[in-house]
Length: 240
Image 1: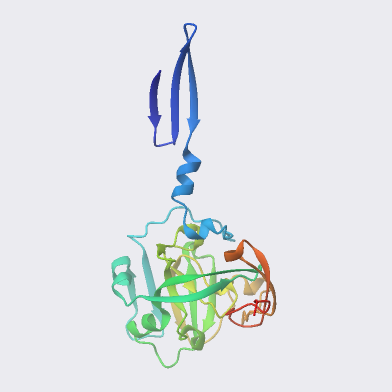
Image 2 (image 1 turned 90 degrees about the vertical axis):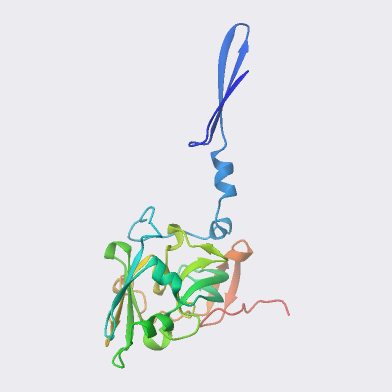
């Protein structure tokens, strides 16, 4: 028996000789490799949703994030610049208006630290995020941006965020519905007024306050849980 491997495609080929006839048997181990390298968010079967179309692979090391608008020191942050800023890890949930909620340790840069780094103007009332492709945008009030759990996040449970879930860096705003947590952010604008974003123009609420009701708890296999309004800190059906 001869044996050869094709690691690029995850294929094993075996040759068997029987009754003078050489037969080839090909087996794939691609799926096994995918499972071994699967991110935590994928392991949890967290939904993937890009309304403007998945961006495909994005180069983390060459990523740039621009901060501009009403500030004294507008600048473009390279990936090394972002990594040099203080890192914060928060325990919180990303809760989607499509009614799923995923808890984890989200790591990144506090939005308040980013605003401090560019010299926030006292005129600023809202922060506007732009995603890669410059199609998706959304804005949040300054007071929400300054809250301790509002991040530009690049990690989930100690793993870099992949493109499926908004990597290399995304807004993380656990106080509001997930459409305010823009994915793959390349620009942040500091403004003295509010502008409706992609989903808000299509009927979603501008304030994006999380409403009481039911969600699928991704951390518990999609179990249906009841939540109060506001940031999801616990479930109303928790066992006492």
